[in-house]
Amino acid sequence: MFEEPYRWMEAVSTRHNYVQEKLKMGQPVMAVPYNEGLLIFGFAPQPGKIFEVYDRIALGGVGHPADVERLRMNLLDMAHLEGFNRSAQDVTSARLLQFGIAPALKQNFEEIQRAPYIIRMLLVEIDNEGKSNFFRMNYDGHWETFKNGTAIAGEEKVMDWLQKEIQKQPFATYSLDQALQQACKLWDESRKLESDDESKKDIPETLQEAFDQWYLEGAVLSEKSARKAIYRPLSKDEIERLKSSTV
Amino acid sequence: MKFQSEPNTSAGEFFELLENSGYRWPANIEGAPKQNGFTVPQGTTVLAFHFKGGVLVAGDRRATAGNSIMYELCDKVIPIDDYTLMAIAGVPATAFEMARVLSHNFEYYRRSQLQSMSIEGKIRALSKLLKENVGMAVQGLGVVSPIFATYDPAGKKSRIHFYDMLGADFQIRTHTATGSGSQIIRGILEHEDLWGEKPLAERTREEAMTLAIRLLQTAALFDSATGQARPEDDIFPTLATLTEEGYRFLNDNETAKIFKTSTERG
Image 1 (cartoon, rainbow over the protein chains, first blue to last red):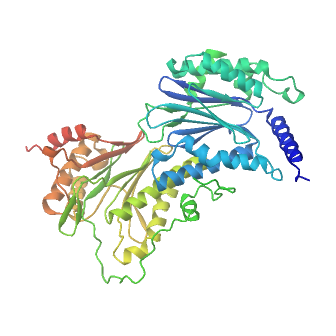
Image 2 (spheres, chains in turn green, yellow):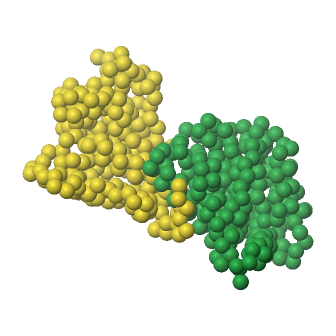
Image 3 (spheres, helix red, strand yellow):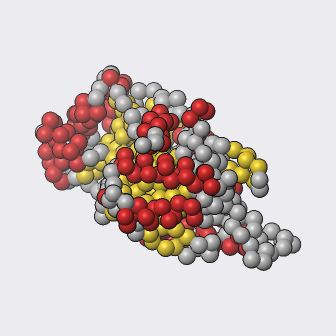
C-alpha cells in the first residue's frame, strides 16, 4: 500500500492531522528569562508538565502523558550516562536534541506503521557560560531555538501568539515575581484564542478558577544557586504571592 | 548519546542503566593473587561527628603511594547530593568511582522517580557498591573504607555511617574516623565527647571546626600519610558541614581564618 510515494506522503499528512487533533487540549507551557535565571511555568488539570532533566536543564511537555514520560525518561537516561561517562559540562540541551531525541522522533513519525508520539516539548537550560537557552521541539522531531523565551501549546495559533508576545516584553530585566505575573497574564490572555470546542468546556474561565481547580506548575533554573543542580520548583509562598497579585 | 526505544524502566536504578550501557564494575583481575591477611592501604585521616545542628565531616589532603607523598591537594570529602557527603579512605581510584556512581545514582533516582531516595536507600546503595567491590578488595587492589554522612530534611535528623569492606554498615551516634591516622584521634574524640567542655553533639559549628582542625593536625604529627596544613602554600584540611540547608564546604579564606585561631597556643 505504501510503495507509492504519494500514498506515503498522504499517510504522513494524515498523521500530522491526527497528532494535531490529539494535541489540541494541551495547555500552554511558557519559558522566559528573568534577572537571575529562567522560569518555566504552566497551568494544567493534572500535574506532570514540568520536570528537571539534569543539573542545568529543565523540560516542559504538552501531549499524551505516557509519551511525555517516555521522552522524559529517554532524556534522563541520555543526560545521566553522558554526565557520568564524560562530564556534566558535556550535557547540553542542544546535544540532547540534535543527537538524541530529534532524529529518533523524526524517524518514528515517518515510519507510518508505528504510533506517533503525541507531544510538544520545551527544553531549557542555563549553559556553562550562564546564558539562558530555550528550545522547542515538535512531535515530528523539528526543533527551534530562541534567545528570549518561548512557549508550547496544544494549538499552534496559541503557541505562535505566545511566542510573539513573549518577545515583546523585557522578561530578562524582571524579578522572579514580575516575570511570573507577566507570564501568568499572557497565559490568561492566550485562552481567548483557544478554539470554541465542546471538549474545552471544562477549561477554567478565569485565573481564579485556574488557581482553584488546576495545578500551577513552575520551576526556575537560578544562576544564584550555590548548588550543582540549579533547578528549583516554585515554593508555595511564591505561588501564593502570584495568586494574590494576579487574581 | 543514544536514544533508547525503550528507556530504562528499573525504578530509578542508575547502576542498572550503566550496566545496560556496557559498564562493568571491575569485580577482580584474573590471575592476580589473593592476599593473605591483607592490610587496608589507607594513608589518610578523615573524620565525622555530630554537632549542634548537623554533622561535621573533615579530612586531610595528602595522597601517598608507599613512602612517597604524591599529592597534597586531594579532596577526600566528596559531595554526593545536596544532603549527603562521603569521606574516603583507601584506594582513591575505587573510592572516587564509587562517589561518582553514587552521586549519579541519587540524582537519577530523584529526577526519574520525582522524589528523593530514602536515607535507608542511600545507605544501602553504598553497601551494594562495596559488595560489588569485594573481589578487588580481597586482591588488595581496591579497598575502600568510607564514612557516609547524610541529613534528612524531612525528619530534621543527620546520620553518620561507616562500612566494612564487605558492605556492612554501622550507624554512629557520636563520632567516627577512618584511615591510617584515625587510631590517633579516635581516643581524643571519645575523651572530648565524655569529658570535654561539653559533648560533641552540643558544640557549635565554630567549636566543631576548631576541634576538627586540631584533630587533623594531631593525626599528622604521628602519621606520615596524613598531611599537615601548610598555610604558607594555602593548603588546609577540608571542612564541610551538613545541616538543614544541605552541605557546605568552607572556602580557603574561611578555613585559613579558623585554622589560625584554632592552632594558636594558650
